[in-house]
Each structure stands twice: as C-alpha cells, then as structure tokens.
Length: 105
Picture (cartoon, rainbow, N blue to C red):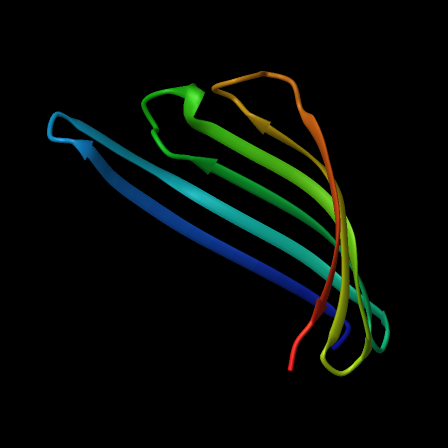
C-alpha cells in the first residue's frame, strides 16, 4: 500500500587491517514503516552486522521502534527506543533512546 514501506539494505564488507589479517562479513538493516496520517510515521527496525565471519565476537545487533513526525515543511521530530548488543563487550542487550529535532532550509 501507499502507507506501508519496507526499507532493506545489505552490505558485504571486506577489510584488511593488516597484511596478515583479513575480515569479511555482512551488514543488514531492515525497517518497516507505516504512515498513520499524513506526516506521522511509526516504524520498527532491525540491524545486524558481523565484521568477521571467523568469530562470533564481531557481531553487533539492534532492534528498535520509533516515530517520525513532520508537522510542517523543513521540520522533523524523530524518536527511537530500542535495544542493542555488541558481542565483543557483552552478551546482554543495552537500552537506547533518543529524540531529535531537525530543521533545515
């Protein structure tokens, strides 16, 4: 429908930080968004990255929900609440929340 949007991105990164070390892995982002009324959007999103397929310690994943509000041209109000985890530092998820106001010319 016109009101439902799925945004998906896939990247494959190939790094060589040193001559004897090579890292390869995917990065994936998915966002499902719905426009309730004109200018009011709600969404859920999921992100996953694994910079080195040879180890589980390179995983980063996040899940979130949020709202975007466009009350008038050139003004955006954005909010997001979610969980994220960096497997190298912890097996537990941490909370994250933010609000952003953006005005542009």
